Length: 330
Image (cartoon, rainbow, N blue to C red):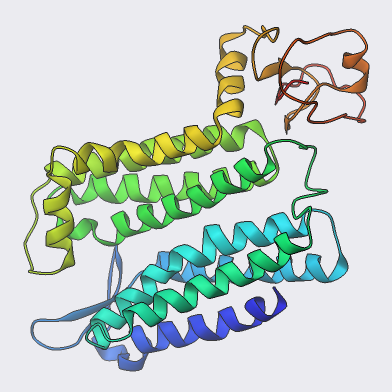
């Protein structure tokens, strides 16, 4: 992880240089709501999205933090590393593929994809090889891998939201697409932080992000736009299909719900005020705000829960009344 944390800023700096800054001329600089603009010729402009700069900076910080935790052997270091690799670094392969298509005529697409896959897969394999890669991360003992996968899915959701924002100006409903894109991006980031902290509000924010992105995708399907003969034309045509269109709208929410199904059921039960845990996979407790995975020792002495799941956590923290959490049962 230290190697990845050191290499990422250098590679990303080269990406921004080659994609935009190498042609920078201050006198030609233009600023729009969707980015910084440089004219290349009479018919071509080069756009730098501020969202990409923010995402790159955030990724560098998270990678550095994960590497530092790994070196110091802190609990949750592997979980943070997996989140950084699969939820932040991996989606950015699309940036580099776009660079290759725009500036190198598409030569090297496979090499770029394979290299990015190796950068993500090799550290993951090394961490898993040591065993118990997610041990010590929060209070969860069961379902940790599902939570990491959910966080990674939100990373890809955020990338889709940023793409919606960056290309909103091509469409007649540009304002709606800009708002939904930025909104889904912000909710994705909030959801990733919340789920990493194993908090209930992280799941709610994540679901808000996927639903918002679905709304934006639906608007994009029905919005008029100026055809340019590029990739965007093909994407728009694909979304018009009877299967691909609804699938693109619903897929992010469905994927997140499948990954986080036990916790999602707990959210519904908490909001409905029906903490019936006798036959449910998720029960509601008022001990803390964490997305926990089982009763505390004090509760286990007074509550017998008949459920096929194994005990997920023995929460040693003192009870804090008037706070609500979701927990997986025994």
